[in-house]
Amino acid sequence: MENISIITIITIAFLGSFGHCIGMCGGIVVAYSSTKIDNSWSKAKQSLSHILYALGRVSTYVILGAIFGYFGSVVTFNNTTSGILLLITGFLMILVGLSLSGRLKFLVSIEHSVSKSKIYQQTFRKLLGSNTFTSFYLLGMLNGLLPCGFVYVFAITAASTGNPLWGAFVMLIFGLSTIPAMFSLGFFVGIFKQIALRNLFITIASILVIIFGIYVMHNGYEYLVNENKSIHGSHI
Image (tube, rainbow, N blue to C red; front, side, top):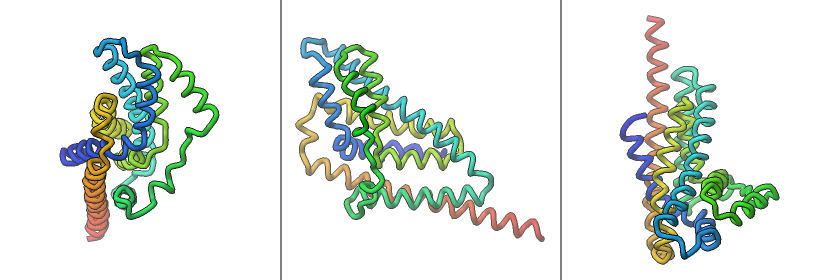
């Protein structure tokens, strides 16, 4: 992982969370905020509840990152397979970026919600009916399992690292970068209702995702070129 990649991940996740994530998961945050949190609680207790929920989401993302990083390591044997994986990753990121901007329906076609399953709904209702600190954390983990195109972008990035630890790290950075938007949603709901502001963040995020996708494809191309040079060099 290079510094520019980490900075890019933070920037994309942070900006995108104020648009896409709030639109996708904002309803859940509002639901548990109004159902599980008592107005008589102190600000510290309310804040801790939100933090535990956020950490639950991040925990799920880290686990997913490790899994995707492991699968990436299985197919990453040499420069050729690494290059091909990065090319595919970059291409998919460009599609996601275009989808975020509204120019494609790519995200819609790959987001199959599991929230309609009976098991998910029963677990969600059970956790929503409890106001223990543990229930906030578990609810966050449950929310982290919801299929989301924005999460897919970074899951693909995690796979491209070809390493479970780096994959987990990518998703950790992604998850932590989305906390400010989701954490502040309960306190500043009115701000995020401004469609123009949300659209601005979505536009910036989509452009950055496309740029990042091009960057990843370039890295893939470099892998293939270096592999080709090494093959020809060995025959000299």
